[in-house]
Length: 612
Image (tube, rainbow, N blue to C red; front, side):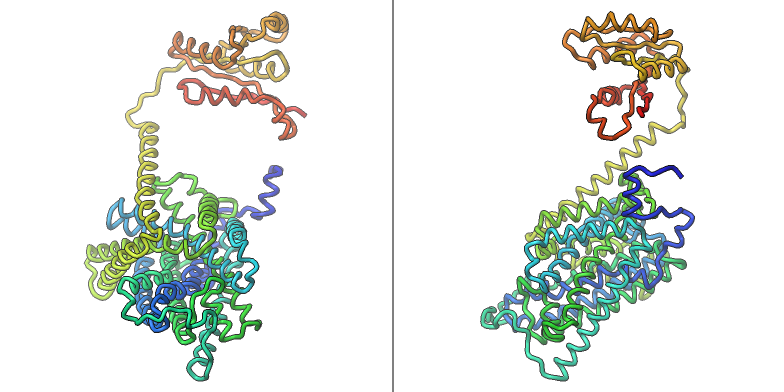
């Protein structure tokens, strides 16, 4: 193994030792680790979905907030329908890709690209929203940190990026404990809360005095407001598609393990979401700027200064931050599938040293970090952007599955379930667009078609390149001569080294000196007799002290005179022993390479001379 550079040593320290491609099957997920890695987004959304519902209902007063459990049950039913639909998707498409593959195959390329754009945007927002919500949870327990929420968010994104760059297995170990810890503490909160509210007497949460709330009659709560509350609560459904997108990451049998994990995730998410919504109603929890709904319920059930309360807040913070890991598991994998179809840059197909799609991980981190900075780490500003992509992908996926099963002659409950799910999620998509569009969702509505156009242009580029590189119906050009030009600024070892190399590849070698100092020409010509060998010295005058223009004009003259010749530019370059020594020398070779890069039949190569 070759010695590592300083960059290589730093990379090994952060990312760890590389993993052989032969060991890829050892990096797959079990059902236990798959629930931790791919379900944290769906499970963690219960920490803020109920609060988003209550933020709308509170305009109608305490009586209006009693609608929260009913809305939660409707959302839970929709979540169950979508989960069962995606279970069929996993069995039909075990190779992964989720809504993108389903829509592309059954609804056409434009629908597939729309689903891909929606999912990639959704995954980016998942990271930003989850991290922002996690920071909000920790600042609820430690209010003094509220002013640093952007810095905390960026730090969490950096940790997530590093954890995922280290590979699937290591990220699964890292994220399993917080996921299962969150499930345990939330179930404990719900069980204890139900006992204390239904079987014993417990006073309501006191955060905002009741007389501060509006006292309107519930009749003043418009249908539009109820729909907005429903749309807000649908954030509880984000992440449901993640397991179907990441099916290939499971151990064999992939489809069976992924389907089982999806059902467990849906059952746990529904239980926690409905439980928190009912407790919030029973305890009259009210959204506040400085404290989350989950924190209020935990303070009432466990006690504000108890160990269990702080465990709840810490686990909520961790699961919300690690919920972003669902996006880290699926964004790079989906990007690699889209790149495989040549709709995204091929770099997204590359797996790094740890068998992770490193370019996708880095791109996701940069985009999510930018959102956190732009929106100040505020969850409530990011939420309106969140659900357009989610429900667009839901609708396209279920519509595609319905058409696939109809063409295959399948009938019965599975087909009806897909049709019913497509109709319901389509209706929710319209509701979300109407209620969230003015709040910022219009950005995503505009961004999705723009991204689809970028996908198409990328594919057109790759198709054009493939067409021009194909050997079909192509006759190679006649053999050409090779004229070698060696730009020189004087005679020294690196130049002589380049001259000897040039003589080995051509019989027509010319050293080119641009004369911007007449006094130096005579000295150069004298030395040339000793060191120039058989190479002809060409002196180009430069009255305006430009080096590039006379050289380019001479190359153009040769191209005109010798149309059948290759022109090879051999650049003598000495390589300093320290990287910072480059700063002490001009980079004329780089300028020449840049100027000649787009000229046909001109080849530029460097002959390095290493300094000790």
